[in-house]
Length: 259
Image 1 (tube, one colour):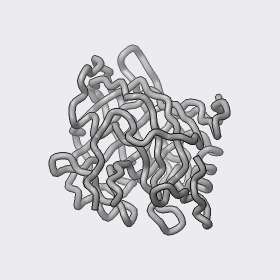
Image 2 (cartoon, one colour; image 1 turned 180 degrees about the horizontal axis):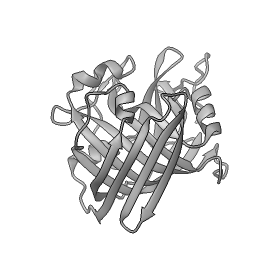
Image 3 (cartoon, helix red, strand yellow; image 1 turned 45 degrees about the vertical axis):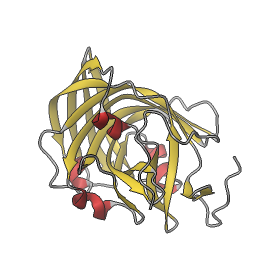
Image 4 (cartoon, helix red, strand yellow; image 1 turned 60 degrees about the vertical axis):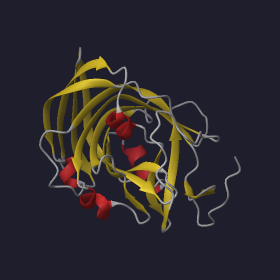
């Protein structure tokens, strides 16, 4: 079994063929260190917890999605732009590829939620959401609508600090993620992405009222997070979803990529 690939601020596998694009803006990263044994049962078969100094992490990340675009087309200004909050875990597969596993993704546009659930098989949920900014303070609010439990969500408020000139091992481990792991058609799939290096800032947590982490299958995770970061954002490209090196896991034929 290969060792996990090095943590790097730029993708070790540049995306050669773009399936879709996104902008991630005003992102706050809250993370809790946990025992890898706690999250291992929540990962898809074929993936295991990714660790740093013996711990893995649970992430709660609210941000503003901007202009999702398909196959190189210009991003959609309304349907493709919305507030989002995800709960994610950190994973590595038998090829050594580091990634994330999404336990839930809240979004306040119903059509993108339905499309992501049906086409991409991702656990998107429709929520009432709002992002408010006042100088260096930013507040994220979420309240789930469908499929439930209704009202799940909460409020996060942070004060954005200075830009980190050298983010260090933990911020890089938490944000330098170049794909997501999921199960697609009974196989472990890896969906690669690439983007510029994250511009990261320190941040102070001012308020946290959340039950999304608990509803994502982690009721024992709570209290003050071990890491709080902020980024103004990056633009992202996703390539074809891979079930094995060089193969796409988006159809029952599992056809070979032609990029």
